Length: 272
Image (cartoon, rainbow, N blue to C red):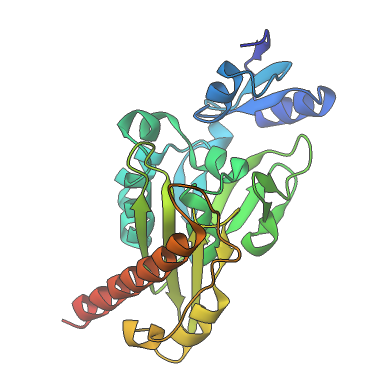
């Protein structure tokens, strides 16, 4: 690990100003990706600016018809939140499936979204739910936020402060976990709000993406039957010796059917 300076700002404004003045500094939240990268000498920030204890970045609350989660909220806090469980139970489920207890108690939702790992879970929820990424300077729609592998629309020095999730009518997440890391080999989040259905896929491609063909099919009727005969090609999938692109493509189809089946179960329970 390279030498660096640890900085603990007293406020969000102080953190943002420090990052603006020091281009090689990096914000630190849970550190679940940055610290391992530094240990392997894959990252060498001049300063680590600790955001984890800033009160402006913590808390879960309702704001009208949206659920707002502070960026420094840990995965374990999301998984155990009564507010999240009542408003978006699929988000609780997703958080509880992340990695292992050690990571869930240190990693944060804001850090995960800002890092945009192609196999991370939260980007699928952010994109499928049509969330808004709130930063230290602006609000960014989910469809505009995720740019590519480990790339987002964030500008240098810009800090994710919260995620604002519109409350859906129903939502479900299905994930095929990597046995060692717990990352998504393929994860599919399906959300329905009134007549709109959004389907977001993580893990299978170089970045999170919406499966528009599945959305169009589900608009006609949000059921597993609506997906019959629908296929996604391997061309845009990640490909390696353990998980070839064709296998990932098939897995996306399987996880989509499972997520939609989860929506149907919620509909049945809601009608009882």
